[in-house]
Structures are given as structure tokens and as C-alpha cells.
Length: 377
Image 1 (cartoon, rainbow, N blue to C red):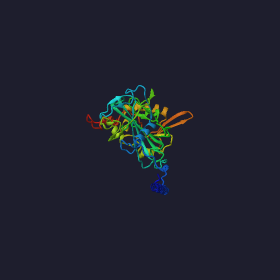
Image 2 (image 1 turned 90 degrees about the horizontal axis):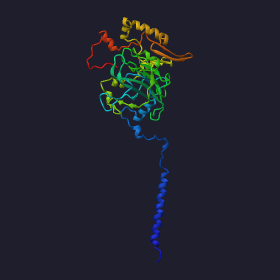
Image 3 (image 1 turned 120 degrees about the horizontal axis):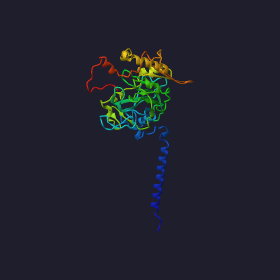
């Protein structure tokens, strides 16, 4: 049987054609543009793209920052309200579930007109840490005590997810919105808390927050940071934002406490920050310096005159109270003799153990509130 030469010739022609096609295709690939994959930004993962509270920060970044800068709280060993409380999730009425030292957090971007001498336009985020208590059991006690501290942190670059973060300022709320408001603000470098949480002292009973243990007695009346212990490390639960609560925090909008108001305010407005920047780097500043009108009334009250004189004498000997042009500053410095705390006032004493509302009512300057009216905490 002879070979089929016709069939073999057709197969050879087909193979030659295929080689030519493949050769032309390979040549064409040489002229196509090639992307440098090294220059491409990494694709966002699902974790970095979820923004449950719709504030422009991913949930993952918020939690990372809240954990990195979580304060180291010092609390009263025998506080009448035990420890900061955890509240039942998904309930609009604040309901204590456990007094276990839970801290609640909030993180939101902050755009400031003046970012300070070191600012170069990098993103900034304000972090709030709320220690929420079952009870304020100091003078003028009331249920549900809403207290907090805050820190302003700055990114090292525009890519917030990849950036390193550094704290710029710390704020501690102490008797906010009352006649004896002694809230403080300080540079993070002053507190040695630029890459971690600052140490915060919480006065037993009233739960005011202080950036320095020695400032604790500058609060209202019975504020004393004695028999203190570290708050055991616990969870930081992100509250989210008003209108976009996270982790079941439906209670943030309740009218039973002023948490909603505190979540909507920045603790780093322009005026206090600018005033702080004019002070030496070793100083902590009062957030609200100057004398309140009601304090002026109390300062000349015969009922408090003796107590104030005694307090001023004791304070002068131990803390060195000054009344110079640096009013509003609290100098915290270390020298060869140890720690020295110089407290400067603008012709006032910020330690009067009574709220503005109670003063006004006692003097007949305030209307009696309705039974369901809320008072500042």
C-alpha cells in the first residue's frame, strides 16, 4: 500500500501556517505596553474599606488607633461606683451590664485651620475615650456619670492606612461645663505620651480626669486621688458616631446623659491650643482659664472665706500657687530636688465643690428646672 502523499502535504502546510501565526502573535506582544506592578497601590482589603460610622475612617484603622493610644487609667481602689461600666448593647436606655472597667472609644477626622508649627497638612484624627460609670457618688451625686479624655493624633503621610501615627495633644475633662471646670490640655511630649496612651488619674466618686496626679486636688471640693490603682487592661469598644452607632451602642443618643453632646464636640478648638503653644513645653494648661462669675461670688462668701484661706495656705506651701502673667498654666517640671508643680491662676481659685447651677439656684439667679430637665454632669 502506497503512502497518501496528498494528506501528508496538507498536514505539513497546516503546521507551517500555525507556526507563522504563533510567531506573529509573540512578536506583537513585544510592542504592548507593560505596567510596572511595583508602582501600583495595593488593593484595599475588605477590612480597610469598611466604614460603619461613615466618617471617612475605616473601622480597622479606628480600632488600631484606639488601642494604640488607650490611656493608662488610675482609679480609686475603693471607688463607690467600683469600675467604669459596660452597658447593655442595642438598648436606647443606658443599662449597666457589668462594672468591669470597659472603656468606650470614638475616632473621627479633624480638620483644623492652624495645625501647629509641626503640621504639614498630614491627616489628623481625634480620639475620645469615655469612662462611663453607674453612679457619680460625690457631692451632688447622680446616676450615670459620663466622663472622658481625648487625644489628637497625626499621620506621618497622606495614606492613613499605611501611616505611622503620633499624638500631638492630650485633653482631660474635669467637671466640664460647671463653675469649677478644671479641664486641662497639654502637649503629648510633656506627658511622654506621643506614641502611646497617657497616664490619667480619675478622682474617686466624682470621676474627674487629670493629666497629673498632683492636679487631682485642684478639682471640686472632695477630689483627692488617694489609694489609687491601675485600671486592669480591658476592651475598648468603638461607639461609632451619632446616627451611625457601632457595636450595638444605641444608648449614645439617650437624653439620660450628656454623651451625645460630648461626642459632637472637639476638645481641641483653636483658642486653647494656641494658648498652650505660647507656653513653655513643660506646662499643662487649663482648658478654660479665668474666673467664672459664680466663682467670684463664692470667693467673697463668708461661709467659704475661712476654708478658702486655709486651702490657699496649704496649697501655697505644697504646690506654689502663682498669680503672674502666665495665668492658666500649670507648670510640671523635674529638677534636682524632685518634682515641682507650679500652678498659675488668673486671680481665682478653681476648687469650690459646687456646680454653676447649684450656685445660681442658691443665689436666686436660676429658674427651678422641670423635673425631667437635665443638668450638666
